[in-house]
Structure formats: structure tokens, C-alpha cells
Image 1: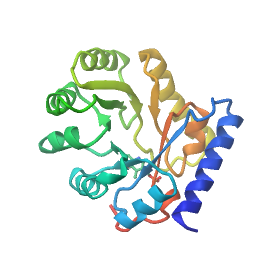
Image 2 (image 1 turned 180 degrees about the vertical axis):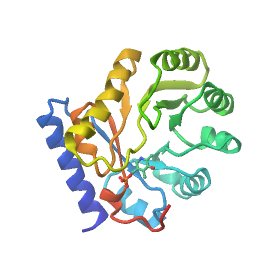
Image 3 (image 1 turned 90 degrees about the horizontal axis):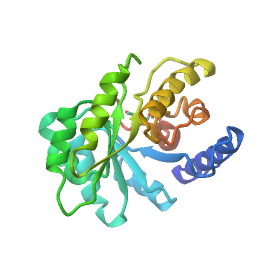
Image 4 (image 1 turned 120 degrees about the vertical axis):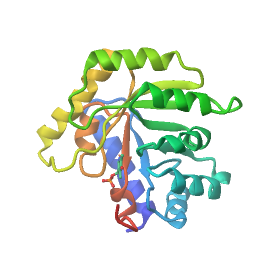
Length: 220
Ligand SMILES: *Cc1c(COP(=O)(O)O)cnc(C)c1O
């Protein structure tokens, strides 16, 4: 199956799930995780109508952003940010999903160019699902005071190895409840293996790699 076909199937499935789980139409956005994918593969998705792409490595992402600059795409950073790369991420990406400290947020804020729109960010929840709501609330307040940033929501990293649907839902419900407590709207959660459960629990952005691109061209 081609990338275009898989994209069409995914879009159809998302629409069907929105209905099934009483989500508003078009409330779930598909972000194509293009890490390790070639420019040709990304172009195939672009030609099929995909506009939002996510990258995990600053260097690789930068290269792709520059090569595809004419396409007017929206770029999401979803990897771990090394502090010496924060400047490039703030300059070239539209969204950063992996903000986990005030220090990192400050660095992104300081390095966001004045002539660009605010950088959209999500707070990344802890892998062990052991977030302290007071710490999160404190972070939210701190980040909301920084210029050139828009705090949109929460992000949940992939949690490998949970194949039971109800267990998957429980994990995503954890993130949803935190988002509601903090009054944050966006929920970046769910990937190829668990996006159905994520949509059931209110994901607004699902991050899909393998289900769209089929294989990664190199392993991580
Ligand atoms: C790779 C990756 C994804 C996509 O995973 P797939 O299983 O390929 O859909 C989503 N989120 C993050 C943070 C990733 O690193």
C-alpha cells in the first residue's frame, strides 16, 4: 500500500472513531512522525494532503525543514532536547511537545525569533505516570509568563508493551484528567499501536509513524 493510501485510511478511521466516541468532527489531528523517513516519503505524504510532521532529532529535523521550506508545513519537535540544540528547535519548529522543565521553556522563549509567531508547546508528562499536580501547576504558571510561547497542552510519551485496550485507556485517562485539572486543551498522545484508545480518551493530536510510513528506514 502507498503512503497516500495509508493516509486516506487513517483519516477515515479517525473520522469513524470521532463518531464512535462522541468526539467533535475534526477534533483529532494526525501528526505524521517522519523521524528516520526520507524526503521522498515525506513528499509522498505531503502530496496526499498531510501538513503536520514530527521529528525527534534536531539535526535531522532541521535538514528536512530546510529542504521542504517551500511546502509550508507545520513542524513538531517530539524528541529529547539537548540544551545546545534548544536554539535551533526554537528557531525552526512550530511546536515543541517535549517541554519538561521551566529551564527548557525559558531557553525556548529566549531563542524564539521576534518576527515569528509564538512557539506552541506541550508539557511532557513523566514516563512513570507519577506526576505531581502541584509541580505541574507551578510549571504551567511559570511557562505562561514567558514571552513568545503558547502553552497548549500535555504530551504523553509512548508507553511500550501495553496491548490491553482498557489498560491503554486508563493511561490516557490519566493524562486527560491532568489536562482538565490544569485547564489545558491540547492532548498529544497515542501512536500507531494505541491511537484508538487515545482518541477514546480525548487525544487532540495523535502522533503516527509506522502506521503511515510502514517501516522506519533505520532503527533507533
Ligand atoms: C516514534 C514516535 C511516535 C510514533 O510511533 P509509531 O509507533 O511509529 O506510530 C510517536 N511519538 C513519539 C514521541 C515517537 O518518538
